Length: 416
Image (tube, rainbow, N blue to C red):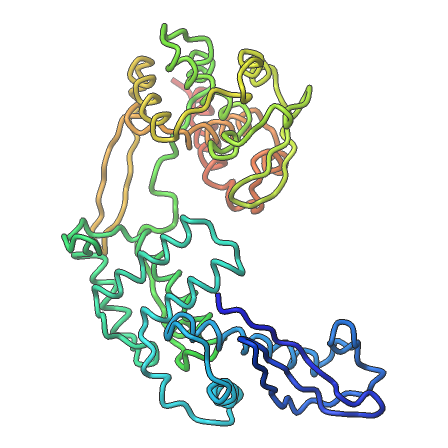
């Protein structure tokens, strides 16, 4: 990022005076007249801020944010520092004291780049999030490379939705790919509106499509796809199964550990021996960055006892290889339960049936834990303390499975 400093200054400490914003870079300095005054008793000379948390303090914070926006804009779009005159002009525009003839010239792709660059720093985005937003930006580039931010119309939103649902293209090769499912399109548009909201808050976008556009996608409620998990009997059979192969036995142990603790593969992969205690272990989740204390049951303890001499608590290999070997395991275990997946592309309903052995993956470990925990009548609020789910709504798909199973069991009381 472009290096600069922005600090406030109250020159006269002997009486009420105007606060100035001093911006320094490349050995030079300019000052912005804030129009905000303060008494010496209200000023903290060490932090160079107001002691009070009133409207003036909020306005000063806004000015610092504007400075950030200006330097980010010049870095992304011009690859240089702004001149002092440009800084003053940009402040006048953003404070409504001058008109910009450049707003309409901001390409939508440039707005995306500014958003990605800003948020990836201030929000500490992971690589996956950056790739996701970059992918959406690239799709918009294919759809209309000259589309500008403030000339966006609802017709453009409808157009990009149609593009996703008919013939999306690979940005690198230009090849047409399969139409996107409604669940994917809904997420992409939601992320796009999040970017628009940021642009509106920063003063780059003067429209309101992100607030007025009403969209509805079929089949995005999250209940059309059967959850892949192991029944308790399947899990115990797997736990005691000897495959006669070290690689498969080790993948078995890693997967069973996920099933008995409810953790993600990515979190367990980072475990060190120092994280393991006698009856629990500590994990800092990758997704929520929250430290969790996970109690160890007898099955999880037995798995860990098999690898006390290993550099790490578990013999974890790459995610892709683990998933490939799990499918080998599923074939051997004859997990042939059919699982139906229903999804929509636009108005069209699609149904695919898979066998459990063909779609088993590490994600099923966490789901196996949750379903079986609820079947054991462990309260969902307790389950969430182990899994790290913050919202009770995340438990609904699993509770639904258990409720349906209970309904089937009750039928055994019916008259023959």
